[in-house]
Image 1 (cartoon, each protein chain N blue to C red):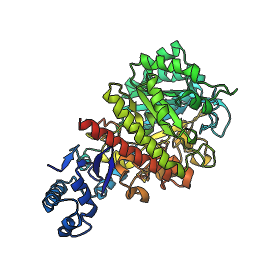
Image 2: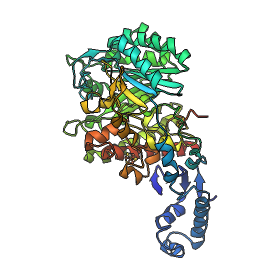
Image 3: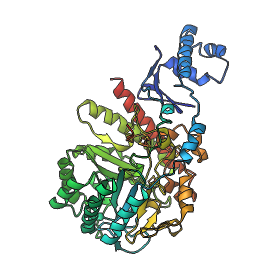
Image 4: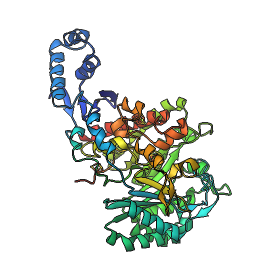
Length: 451
Length: 46
Ligand code: SF4
Ligand code: SF4
Ligand code: SF4
């Protein structure tokens, strides 16, 4: 299977199963419309009004050479990989700790329902936090690198417990043969110099929530009283990002139907000096007025493309910044097994509520039917685990046919569940955006590689 | 080649043998929390 598209004056051809990316001229691009569809002798005559027979012949020869080298129309290697996927017996290697089901903001799109997650306001105790660390060590088999994410609501509302958990984890990791990497997500309201220093000393990554332009941010991310947050958080975020040398953090925003011109928000964040930026489409009930609908897609595609062009332009002028969703590693990147199984929710990655309940990931928290156990009992519902373990691009019919499968890895299971009530039918609007982002990301790489 | 310029030569087929060790980061941890993209992630099995 191949996928080809034109963007920014480039003809790009992806070979799906090998991951090879080719830049081709017009002759080859047009030949590929017919190659394998009609007998080869006929291709030259089909294209006779555009190219000489000689050029078509040359193009065909190059196509065949690549085919022979397994870089074009390469075979589907699924069959070979499936046993490896099925026998991988994943262990838990990452936990998302819901340190506080409480928040000092009232963000409109919050899937945690203003921090409460379909439940009541709660803070995690240090005791539960320590048990979560013990559970992770115990459940992680031979894995050395373990990730712990402090998430909320707003984790800074329970920061002493965050510190206590970090201290505990550090005190036991050597003996257990583990290496913990911590991440914290924050809305910034409570950040101060002490907390920033602590984060810099202890957190591998920090995610700073801000949506972009002041009016965009303040519309969706107000305080309980309705006042905006932009003016409070921007200087703090700038300070924190600089103190981390502009690496190992993200400013992370959400775009909605209200700001389909979100490239302006990304560029605004870049203008504020941020170098690590992620702005992502809202995922919410389609009945919400700010939800992204199918009819918004053309505008969103244009906007992604526009953003890709602006990123190229800025980088050319020495104003480099990174946009999370356009990051792509063409020369290395993950192995095909990882590309098939994706996010690892419910198997390698679990979420822990303030009271110590285990869920397949942060997005499932509060949905009773997905409660898998507790930090005391461990996973007691192996059937839930099994159903997540069974998710891969091969078990999802739509993904199996999709050219983007090895870049996307089958999408977000939570999105599937929220839109279709099952774990394997992808959320189509998300897919459309995903594919467009991958096209843009590859185009950027192609331009940068081509000088 | 005159008509085709290949940007990458490391092929996915070749990652089957050593793949699947699981030492890498889980996808959702890095930033997004709402979506899953793996192509940008680093392999830790060097
Ligand atoms: S560390 Fe590399 S080889 Fe191991 S599972 Fe991750 S991507 Fe695959
Ligand atoms: S874009 Fe959609 S269909 Fe394609 S692999 Fe991702 S989730 Fe599956
Ligand atoms: S199901 Fe979705 S939200 Fe949950 S870990 Fe996977 S990609 Fe992330």
